[in-house]
Length: 305
View 1 (cartoon, one colour):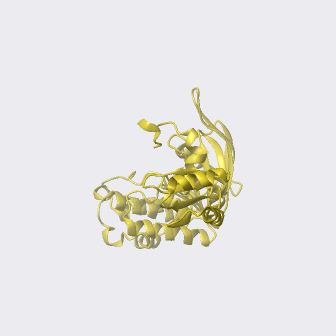
View 2 (cartoon, one colour):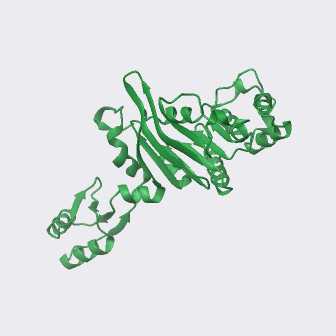
View 3 (cartoon, helix red, strand yellow):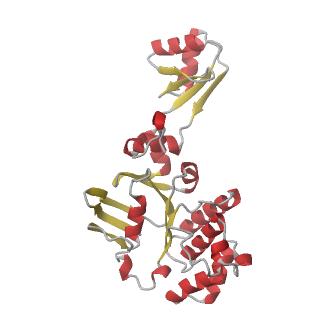
């Protein structure tokens, strides 16, 4: 279990992390989300002892990271996959890490096979593609067979097969009782992979909840309707006290109500419907509703990056 208590980090007059408190529990994949500049990378670096907090602490089952003997056996991390000595082979990169924590050569071969790099173990890491480098970084995180995994953008550079592989791997590791924290901007992937979410904005905690609960709590239900009489339908629904709007293509969207209620009102008014369907909001929709106000960088037209 990872516990963050009142974690605070300042850079001159800027408060990057502001009293951040949350717990990452074993047995599930926890997604760590936030806009660019929210403080996710700074938080993870403090979790690994690479940055020193001005206030607060991070504990792994009651111990600080620097108190862990042979830390690779306890915490595996992926921050920057290409941060390797380019002249070393994949095998010797992992062997060098293994020796710092008394991990045997056999484990190096095991993780190379696990991530699919066994056939290129003797190739220099500097010549690896982005996806291959990512797999090598994941191998390094798994090297000590740790109870805790901290992964920053683990699917970056992976092809569709690789994305499915890492998704399955993370779920399996969590099912074994490990603690898995994954930072990512890919909302569609987090919606599939993570059972729990921690969301931050401008260094503060915005949400700490289950993925399904997060989506349900930050998105209103919608009904999509297609009809030959869209303007009349909008008028009928408005008189019934419902909020309806036209979308491109002529569809009508009704907020905060179910399909049965919309169908009943349309039938009573004699409005012919060609399509009537509930529309489920996505994790991206829920995230932007909650965290959109904390975004630091926006393009023209108000689109969020």
